[in-house]
Image (spheres, rainbow, N blue to C red):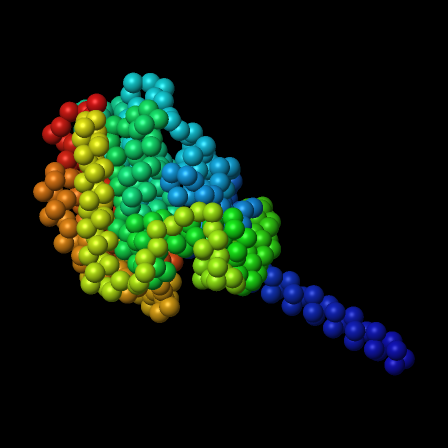
Length: 443
């Protein structure tokens, strides 16, 4: 009888447990449906499905699934991204290592095409992608009589970490190959200040490519990476396939609760990935063997000292302006309009009021860029008169994000959310349209 009562109680316990699990699942699913609706403004079960992982609501900035080291040394540009597929449908790392739907040089397929070159670093690269996807500049230019019915072809010559003179060199190289441009946009400023000063701190000439990128590749080429850098690299290699598999699962989730759980999992993996990228960036510049640089087969212009702030930032900003003037002169000689945009950055104080949530994302006390931007950006702005005196269409964008109610920064470096990208794209488009509205179609 005791055994019978025990079995009866066990069955009741299992039954109650199953009921509780079902109720918990129902509440979890309802909560997930509500969360998904408020985030995406659509019902999960009737949502528009997309193969584009960018539409999953996960910030994958800087994550290239399947590759641990994405850059390759380049004899002219310093470095490029390894040609190959991209996780965004319609884009690839093309034959020259730029993110684009096209290989270069691109030849017009009909006379109604207008070719727009974009120069700069990762912000400019992201702008190119966003513009191709949303056609903000194209729609606004089409309102002008000379651009009515025109199709814009955006050609990015921008790569994360690029700074002057890489924009100047990449442009001239493509022009030498016969690439046509009808107008050229340069979005820069942050890398010139932040990365050039990191060069200075490493006693690498500030005009050389970013030490965080090119000297690390040299370390790989010379087999002189530190043990800590190699460990971080192995962690990246382990995390990459996990992110890829989790994204595939996330795309095919049949339930809203599955989507929420997998989204949190992917976000945690991406957080781990970025942490290891940060560690790799810190350690890869410090080989275990102090003779690593002297034995390198790749030559860098080194300095004997770290220059003080008052000297290095003045030199950097003078050089930035000089390179922009040279770009303008080259393009003007070919009757190609040039537009130079100074990008906004959170570390340069403006009137923007950050929410507590955005502060946690956008700022870091340990940022290697914070102090450089505060000291260097005012000097960039002082160069505006020099640029305009040389007939450059220069536009100061440092305050364009001030009135946005939504979060506009996706990391504590320099990159923007979709609302931030929209504001930047509209600012670029409006600036260009205001200049071209009374001018004929570029030849």
